[in-house]
Length: 102
Image (cartoon, rainbow, N blue to C red; front, top):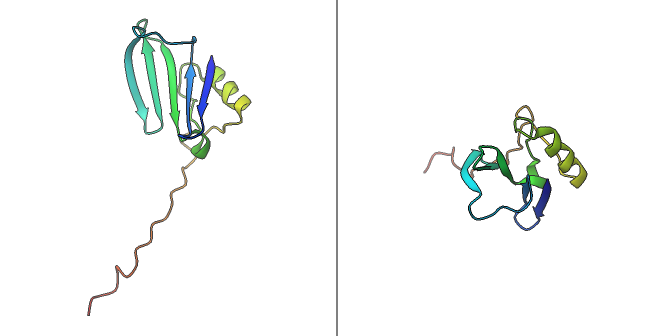
């Protein structure tokens, strides 16, 4: 497995068996807002993509290669999260919305 991190976009890609050829992809599934899995012709994952990797952490506990992915991200210093770890939401405040006009 090879981890490729792009700091500018805060994205991480994990190539399961190395470089992916032009005819290697059979299917791509978006698991949630922060994860995409690319499957090979044999139906097994060949690439994992993670968005907001350092900002929010990555979720790997429900993936086929969870143990290997976990060790890979620990080694890279990227935190992990589960669905029980809430994502911090920035509060949006509206000015004067509740004040009656006039």
